[in-house]
Amino acid sequence: MTLTLAIPTHNDTECLRRLLAQARDLSIFDRVVVVDDASDTPVTREEVCPDGAWPGDSLTILRHEACRGPGVARNRALEHVDTDHLLFFDADDQLTPDLAALAHRLRGREFDFCLFRHADSRRNHWGGQGQMPLDEAHWRRAGVQVGELGSVSPDQAAALAETANYPWNKIYRTGFLRKHGIRCSETLVHEDIELHWMSFRHGRDVLVSDRVGAFHFVAAGGQRLTNRRGEERLAVFGPLDRLFNTLAADAPGKLADAFLRFVSGLFDWIRGNIDPGLLARFDGAARDFLLTHVDEPRFARITRTDPVLARRIVFQMERGRT
Amino acid sequence: MTGNIAIGPDAQINHALSVLRNGTAEGGIGNETRLLPGVVLRADPELKAGGRYTSPEGRLLDLDVTTAGAGSWLALHLSLGGGEYAPGSFVGFACRVAAPEPITVQPCLRSGTEDGFVDRFYNKHILAMPEEASHLDALPLQNQPDLPLHAPWRELILFLPTHSFRWSLHDLRVFVI
Image (cartoon, rainbow over the protein chains, first blue to last red):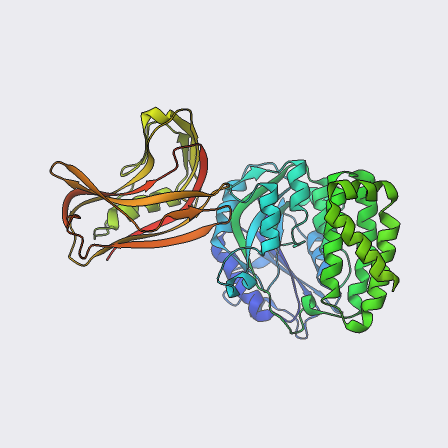
């Protein structure tokens, strides 16, 4: 297995330098592709790799002259990957030694992607360690919380698809992404939703590991995209529409219903993270989305299989009318 | 098994555990399953224990145990060697564990005597749940007249359930201080 580490970055040289040093120490990556999304000071090899640990073409640095978001950056990185597998990663997160053990274990295995556990900095503040409780619940529901490496059944995939749509907790087979045209959305935020769900839609040989391969840092406030509260949040409906149409047509069963459950939760998350002045527009767009995609047969099925979701959908539709 | 040049009462077992941690192994489970010199899984034959164990890279042990009978014990025995412990010592361990279905594991310090052995159980059970958890405990030897400071052999024993179960021992470190 040859493996590329693909990293979008924007004004985060210090973290990028730390990540590249970590990646060198793990000795599992053959290539690194960095896409500098219009940092104020362009990323240079000398600055992020002062010890020359990634010589020659083992490190590729690409640059956008205008900031286009991490989705565009990841897509551009994917175009330059020439290894058979890749891991998208964010500059401000950290790799863990367990990722190396997982990569060794994956050698010689056939798979489309391998989902691994991560640790979230917010858990540390509560005195714990691991993923956020909702993600743990989805892993528990899928029955994959314990196990160094296992295959994922379609039912388990539907449960795991509802986890947070991170791009950096999966080792991908490059050919899998290219064959199915799986990419990030080119929106400034929520760019990972399409990558995540289309992966589960098309994945046939999906693996899962309880190894903690990444440490995810979440910092409240600041200029990070996660903390954006403006109009860019409204752009989420484009990817959601495309995804639902695809999932409903190609995978009308559990995965499409799982996606609706995810979307319903996402709507509530966005409402808590958007400027109050945009709430009415957002609620109206959410109502339109639900009215368009939740037809009577689907709603009838949801009322039987997931009455809580049915109640939430009704509530969210009503909220958008006012 | 590579040589161990570390010294101290906990050196040999921690060396054995590091060999298990850094390598990979797998095999079937029976009444006596030798994982390494000094690391043995023992089951009451009445249990009719079976199943598989694996030792993934960077981890110690994943157990998938099946039982077909009713028996009294199933335990992971870790040899601590023999010798003299100083008065006031602590014999302890730290571990990381997980299990798909919650189980408890009861740790015990077993000390050899002229006519058998004495067991001293740790106060806390190790609780293994689906989400990995860490556990730390230490047994003080102070004021424990029934626990010999000198013993020809000792074991740290982790008593496991006597029914079918899965258990992952991600890591274990033993200390004598």
